[in-house]
Amino acid sequence: MSTHLEEALPEPLTAAGREGLAAILARPRAAAVAVDFDGTLAPIVEDPEQARAHPRAVPALAELAPRVATVAVVTGRPAGVAVRYGGFAGVPGLDHLVVLGHYGAERWDAVTGEVRAGPEHPGITAVRAELPAVLERAGAWPGTWVEEKGRAVAVHTRRAADPRAAFDALTVPLTELAARHGLVVEPGRMVLELRPPGMDKGRALTDHVRETGAEAVLYAGDDLGDLPAFAAVERLRSDGIPGLLICSGSEEVPQLAARADLTLPGPAAVVDFLAALARALSR
Image (cartoon, rainbow, N blue to C red):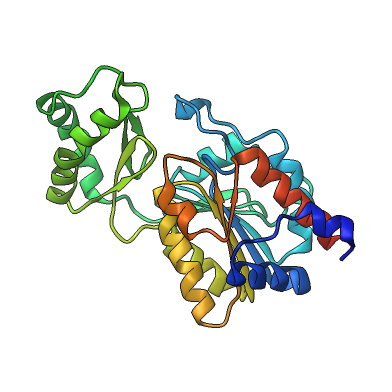
């Protein structure tokens, strides 16, 4: 790799991260690249329905994908929503992109353009019915709102006058509601998501790496929901599969930055890194 390209790729701060990046550069056709959507490929916005991939995200992924074994978007969103908001469908170069939605409970393959999924957990229906009363009893703050996610339900507090206080006030009652119906609560950046157990990005990522036979892995994320994926990469490392962990930087989630090999200041920088990696692999 030339000096110019070495300078274009920020060096990971950890030995494990440097080993992971070196393995990807040395054996790209055996490498899996996986990224979160919101906060990693798409800037965080107050209204999640307005989230869209960074303008340079699709070109960067389309340049990178043909040079590695697999590119996957791993997200808590429904797979079809992530495809629409990302603009991933029908893009030359992304012919074999995979979107693992709802933490892996749904899968969209670019090669078929179809979403595959199992049955919905019955607890979601019960939670939908009870949630308004639970929020009222908890004194949900003005600005708190509910996002229907199909296989999950999310309560956002980012629009409240005091988002952190609203988040803290709702954590216990929503956790109790979820537990009554066999669900779990996934905390995020001013959001509490009620979803079925056994669905997490770590399991989705591990299954995908094993399925593809990847011998090196890169994962980039920004939120608490990405911690299981970070843990999965750490376990894969212990099994002899080098990995690189990237945090799309946020002061709201220091737990992720503390475990990352490389922290980048948000989606624009993540996209630039992926584009630089693609350029490095083209030489």
